[in-house]
Length: 286
Ligand SMILES: C[S@@+](CC[C@H](N)C(=O)[O-])C[C@H]1O[C@@H](n2cnc3c(N)ncnc32)[C@H](O)[C@@H]1O
View 1 (cartoon, rainbow, N blue to C red):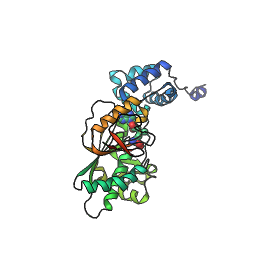
View 2 (cartoon, rainbow, N blue to C red):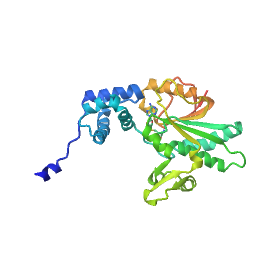
View 3 (cartoon, helix red, strand yellow):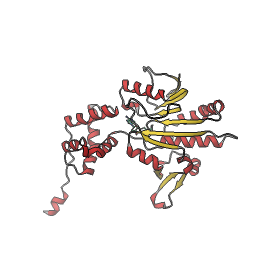
View 4 (cartoon, rainbow, N blue to C red):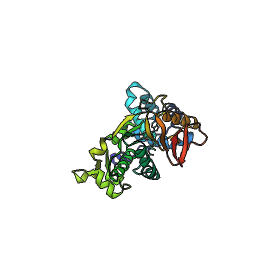
């Protein structure tokens, strides 16, 4: 009998439509992320993992907890679980070719002594930021005289992903898209080979900083003279009006003539924003 009982696997909890709507309305109002009804299975699956982790038995109890004072930390976990954080080194690599081929040579000829300020506004776990840093370092290697001094800010809503970005430590199998020559220059292997992780060198880490920032806020507490803003693969999760508002707010932080990058499936078509297109998904502030 004991044997039979130990083999019984608890079936996963089901989320009711009302529970899904309670969560989805909250996420959309606080973070802008659209969660239409067809995303219910996805949300249910991702939050079933949170139920298992917290030991909470039902979605009703989970919702009560997460919206209570005691559930503040779990609220952050819930947002992390629901939002999509997919990212990669050298993702959508044509943007980095544009940096090296057009933008950086232009910057150095127009502002040779200034610092280049870059902001990645949906930085996830940092792969985008460290890619930009490696591209800049490589560009500098090929300059005879003055190097471009630069700083990169990464922001996101996900505390968990930002923590990874700050440590700058990644599993070895995450770095396969980084060309080997570059990898060897900017990444250090762990002293313990069993760990199979790599870390960006201090020279790169000293150029980047991270903070939590929710793009649906009315005011962004960051500088207002960025030369380049990357806002890639996040606006797709917002509705059209919010996309327009966010782009306008980001443009307030971009200096005139500064560059703005969107993800390859995003565009400014039909939006009233102060940008002109330079290449598909590359724009310049008017
Ligand atoms: C798919 S990832 C894109 C990462 C990177 N930009 C890239 O293209 O590889 C989207 C990121 O947007 C973040 N995000 C979603 N809603 C946000 C919001 N309201 N404010 C700030 N970041 C948000 C998510 O946490 C996630 O890390």
